[in-house]
Image 1 (cartoon, rainbow, N blue to C red):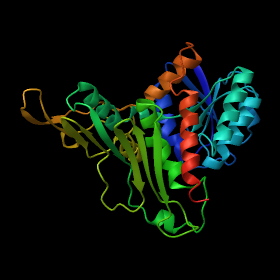
Image 2 (image 1 turned 90 degrees about the horizontal axis):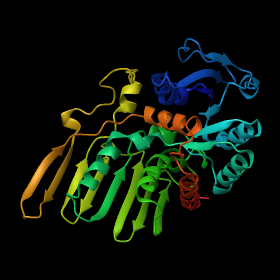
Image 3 (image 1 turned 60 degrees about the horizontal axis):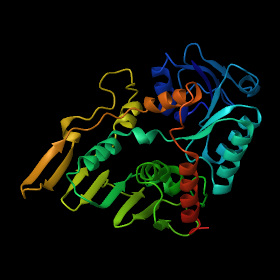
Image 4 (image 1 turned 180 degrees about the vertical axis):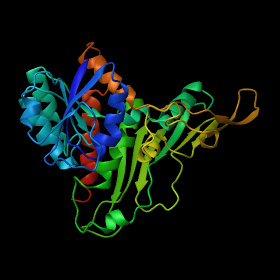
Length: 338
């Protein structure tokens, strides 16, 4: 068993972590949840120790891994404190607020023989996994362009913020999802062009970004905005022989918001109306247009990977250099506004 504790008892812990940790009850034991205040907003989990004393985490030798799910600005100091107390650490994204902070955490972990990693669960999004399947089928030919969109229509969010903050920026809060997908699949780009904007004016919240990453002739674009009343397709992939369009995102978050848990056999599963469309010309010049059955997304696979690394000694799922590259790209992009 891998025995874990959480620092933070909000939406991140209860919606995006606990359902998947609890699904892996044969290999994961959730022992303790620390929070400065014991909120009643979330139903307590039977058998879990809830505490307002962080020493209950630090001084418990049974706890092998501490998972940090607190607000972005607290990730680095809390992760450092956990490492100094001899604990392995998993940190919600964004991993930190700067490249230097991230490098310091990895250096400290290496010095102490400990594990620290960023929680990049969206590597197991169904739309992202389906795009990989289509690319690897070879039906698109040579890749030319990939567009990735993560849009919302939530104008009230930036409208409610009257100042600029790196920690609260849309870039740091959301590009950390899609940018990791790009890095995990395509690696380090040859060069990058970024556009990071404050649509409501200078000094306001960052509420838009457009990141272009170039890999030889391939261009991968990551675009997001808080002001898209109709979202753009989740993925559009162009190749020399055709294209693939996946209109809708992975459904795990949708189901979690409805408190429809991963214990249901159809949790997060796309229906036929969610399937993407592959259009291509084959080697004989024949035109095809077909639906592609979506791959199954499952964030619990991230917890399986944690177990494999910390208990079975396997390689980290999210490599240190991947997280450092992401922090380098995020930091360079946000500095357009500083």
